[in-house]
Image (cartoon, rainbow, N blue to C red):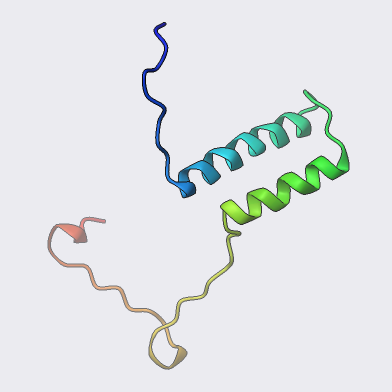
Length: 80
């Protein structure tokens, strides 16, 4: 394979996501017993991943006055 003539120019956000992805792969390998990681390495990976990929939080969506949300479908969207 020929060598690259130019280096890819990724944005900072893309670089952080790539780094988080690599750390996630290491954590999965550690969880599956494929590699060994110290507790310090695991904690550091969790911190870096937490900065790149936000935690999912539960959300409750309510309608007016805290009531139910009414969803109205029309046209082709109404195929259920």
